[in-house]
Image (cartoon, rainbow, N blue to C red; front, side):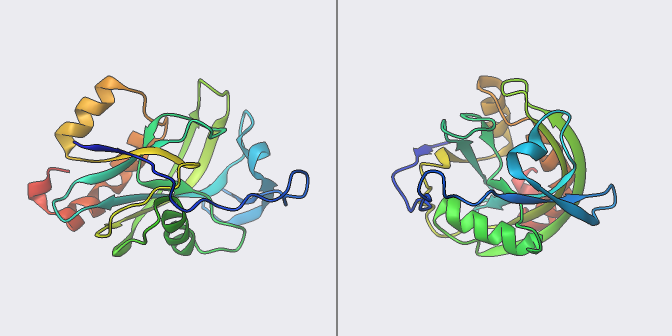
Length: 200
């Protein structure tokens, strides 16, 4: 299970202090229908506002899952391991488009294949920050064949893992509060994608 530190890949250009536009998220009802928008941080303040999100699981040709360790500078869940990529569509942006876009931005490479893997709704407080994930999450699974070049502002390190290596890593260090919820929900599609021999 080689772990690769982020190495100064392409970083997003930050707007000058005080001039950045607020990042807006789509608020949804329990059926996933858009009902409004909210500023990103305000949507995560307890008790949280239900909003649209996405989670991506990418695998190599050996069926190993690409994990990322969130950068220490992240305002939410810094320094913990999580799935390949997760985030929020911009208002009006299709979740598939957002998932492909954000994966390329964070990892410096686009998925070779990406398919829908269902949705899951959850409420996960983050004990460390006090923030709350109230999310209607669109799941995606796919393949990665190019060498990732993670943006160090987003990702501290990456690792390709088998199911057994994932279990060991989970015993050794913290994972995001939502990780197992989204992985379990995506498993049927993951198994179709990777085959039974991969063990997912």
